[in-house]
Image 1: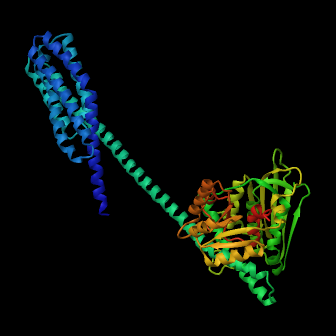
Image 2 (image 1 turned 135 degrees about the vertical axis):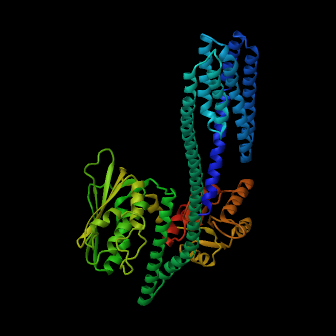
Image 3 (image 1 turned 180 degrees about the vertical axis):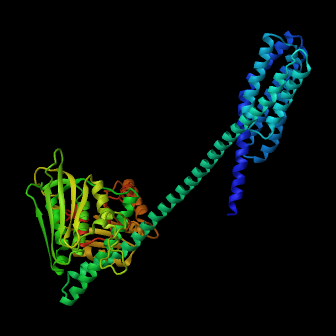
Length: 593
């Protein structure tokens, strides 16, 4: 509350200064017309044999014009010094009084000696000077009073005393003219002052908004950086957890041990799902969502989703099936990973919210499709359903139908909103039909380009290839290093490990490798710096290019682009399974034996 009077004082000072500045600018604009009018009055004075008065009028007008220019120049040169306002206001008042002397001399000497057309010209010049000058002189303090009173008083006295222009009626009209002019001037000043005040307040609001925007953008950058760091710190140990569990599950285990491994794997995957949802939402909000357009098999995407959730559905006593219409094209172009992600969200929710009955994934071709192939994916369940009042907010961020402390179902409330954003980004649409106690149907329509023929995908062909070769694994985390080392050995690959980029450079100085798996964030020397140094050495020695796959836990921003710019050849995000690792290294090691 204590800041409000101070802020009001600052605004009042700014308004006062702007009024003075406006008055000086308009006064300068009227300087040339003033000199011209004074020259006409001087000519009339010469004609009616009042040369001294005419010369004085012309001289005063020139002095006033130059004075206005000087005051305006000084004020503009001192824009940042508010203390300049008060002295300039006083000076402006004296200037206004001197300006009024032009009309005062005219009333006292030139007007009484005039007759005929000369009287009309004098009255016209007098009215013109007053009407124009009043508009800006009234903006500064008491300047209008200093300007008007001498000249009006002179006309008033002359009209009553000098027999040559004696006119009591004209004299009586002068006070009325003064009061009317003063009221109009006050209204004009109030309007200008209000406009300036509003502009200053608007400018202050705009500055405050710009500052708030800058703070919000800084907070957004900080949030994104935090999420990136959080991603790295969580994904790095998750690589060790999932990798170790995958290796353990391939060994001979007792039924109880296998059950414990499956529980640990399921829990780890659930944690990773939550992390991925938060990071995906952050990517979408930051505008960093990237889509790919590549050949895919709709049947394979649906089958992989069904296969993933089949064990969970079986444990819950649910029937999980798929029904793909024969009219659906076998191969299309689209983003298989994002389509699978949407289906996994929908099927995962269906399994979570269905206690008995069946879940069906139906795929058919939209009948109304014309120029493009619109494929419709429907996930229907017999679960608890969704109340009608909750449907409009179903795709809102962090929305959950049951928000009570005792809610039975977990989740971040981001799955559906991410699915909607993904579908929207792919040019499709998502809708829902539901009835409490009867179940729900989520419907996704995606425009996909049909591909003729059924050539085997390079990914499937590569997965069947035999692998061999030597890999340099550069990883600072000891657990991850041991885990990935074991995964590579299980794939039949020879492995040499390094803890950071500098050690990798030392290894490369005396050994050759078929592939380098390079972590990006490491002490001593990070993966980006090490990769640039490796590429520089290869160019200097005209040596063959060693493939480098970036292995990073960062999941926000343009990480893949940054890796490619550093000289890396591919990008593998942590955590990853043995199958994902095999798929990543196959293009480089399939024919290296």
